[in-house]
Length: 481
RNA sequence: GGCCCCGUAGCCAAGUGGUAAGGCAGAGGUCUGCAAAACCUCCAUCACCAGUUCAAAUCUGGUCGGGGCCUCCA
Image (cartoon, rainbow, N blue to C red; front, side):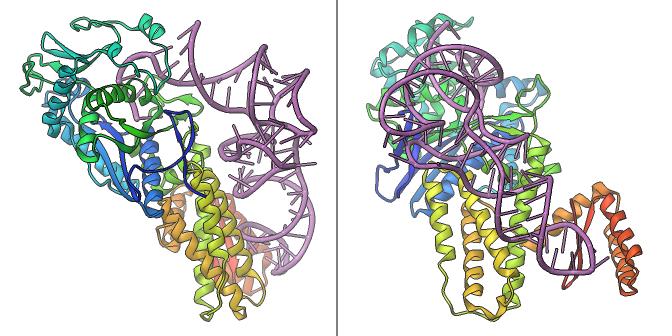
């Protein structure tokens, strides 16, 4: 079984064959840095983070490039509103982006280029397009002439005639065809600008990604990704300007992640249902958010809601509880020299799921089965005397940790993670840890005296506040639910 | 209007030709002083209709319902 990926360009799953054996060049459209990232950004970046991780797990040497677009109309507008320079604004939100991605537990890409540091490459690319007759200068702007590129719209599969009827030329633009798009924009007073053969100006949106991807990955590379909303116009235009300039195929596989809805509605500022990553992390653990995102296939829409996040929290807790049980059981048992193929079997199922277009939802389903097996084995009589069972738990635990890492999950110490979650949830109950501890001690005393009425009353009172007691051989623990 | 996607159990969610993964919730059981947790068992014929096929959730056509893109957007 080999990796198959859904390619937006062909509209179907294809076997993944990198241009160079063993190596993958991957470019993901990052953000335009003018505001805090929202959960849509979180999803896109988490999705491509696991794609990056999985490709590395498969043994590929991955060159993963994710850009910052740090010059753009929206940045200029926002900077003007705040009375600071575009550069200051961009730097502020680059920092914020880095912090957010870090708190989400993302691996840093191989490179994170900035548009403003690749102006020369942008100008070079625009020049090539002008030289080849695919672009024209007009009043200091340079536009791409879409009718000169026959493959235009091959990615988004739209119809030029129908698109044209809806397209407009904005005031101040000098397009020959309403569908043409800007490669270079003449600077207006007060805007950041760079000298160019067409006068002072700045890159249009789209061209910076072509310039940066080619700078680090070459004129043809393997994977280009981003959110579905980038298919048109951004990625369509990237293809046009890149292939138009180089006469080479640009990206081989186009991967697009689905949207995030909020309470079944499209997330938008006007609806007031716009959550930033920072907002969410106030309430939910970053790993819970990641787990939630990965329980759906990356191309499907997901619905962000309190209920769904809480379900994810419960699901992730199940993993940590299972890992905790496994660790405790193994600690309490002698080492086993027996072998077990439980771990390898689980890994095979995981791979099969992931090979099918990164089906993390199915993969996690298989991991749940591993947890169940661990829980079963660990509670079976004679576990400690069974080298086979000990080996099975050992291998399953190792597999869960190894495969979890491919998804960016289960990286915490289970006891610590569970404790942290419990303490966080405890705040909602109005109780303190000391309150719970004291209640547990009182109940223990009652139980010793066989005063079960009192002991049960204490337990019920805590349960009513959301704290569930769990009696075990090692004493009584508790969890908030 | 054009293009595209979706509709699977109470909820979330995989599955795209061979009689439906997984999680949550629910029912019964084991364990427990009783519980909880854990484990075991049970719980769907896949929006609807008509076709193709030996065989369809999975293909085709249609109906109903929901959503997205076409302007900035992950």
